[in-house]
Amino acid sequence: METTERIVEILNDLIRINNDRIEGYERAASDIDSLQHAEIKSLFYKMSEDSRTYKNDLVDAVLALGGEAAHDTTASGKIYRAWMKVKATFSGNDVKAALESCEFGEDAALKAYQDALQEEVEWPQNLASLISNQRQELRSSHDRIKRYRDEFRAVDNLKT
Image (cartoon, rainbow, N blue to C red):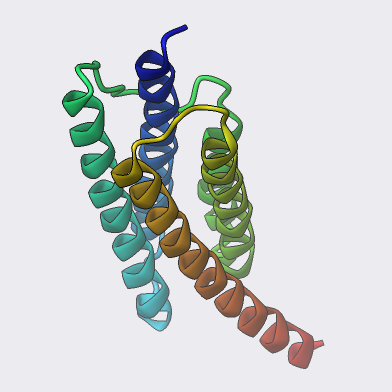
């Protein structure tokens, strides 16, 4: 496979992962109906918007390489299923469980970005920087989700 084709394939995988994040965080946010958790709802919408920006940047990169950008979610569905857990956890209005599911999804996204950077292809500098910068931002999102999850766990522990 030609290097450019492989790079387009990798970028499309990252586009799919961001499509998963968009769908997952929008579902999670829409399932929060308590004003008590408005901050979490706002965070979920922000992360969805962040992924929309990441996706658009990746689509631009694919198009610049002469490729066709992906419009679907991940083929394996692993990340998608993790996001779907978010919806299921909200049936009991369990924000902590939703945060745990989101953290799992963030772990999977971080791994996908790391795997992309470790691919044995000659990355153009601008694309290597783009992927690395998005990965750093995903790390910050992951850590923020983890902090909220830890806070909810601490509150639960105080209740017991």
